[in-house]
Image (cartoon, rainbow, N blue to C red; front, top):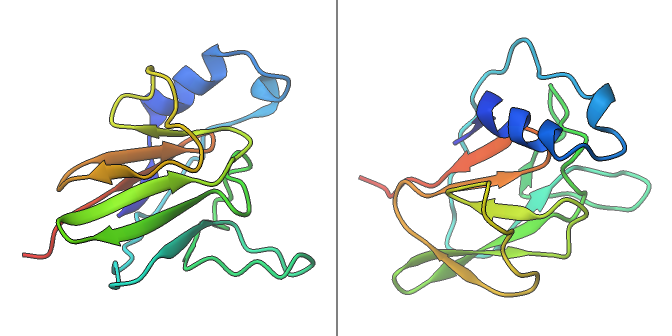
Length: 130
């Protein structure tokens, strides 16, 4: 499931990056669900000019400007899933966004209920079938 997290947004703004002052938390967000298919899935924002078509397209609305076009991969593993940051501009965080981001190009295992934070407010929650 993909939704917006106000606490994460407040944390991102507290970092005080160059665009932090111009960001506004979206007033209305409809949670979206994506089915995790048994293949790697690209997470990011669509770009026609660059030919980027993510499997989990976070273009919006609302569009989170902190999500890179090629942000992360969700990779199937025998025991579940892993997330791989693709060298995104703003990082990918697992469960506690106040900790350092996951290391780029390194698979990090995910479990049922894990939360992946990216962009300025986007939270992906991983759920096992059941």
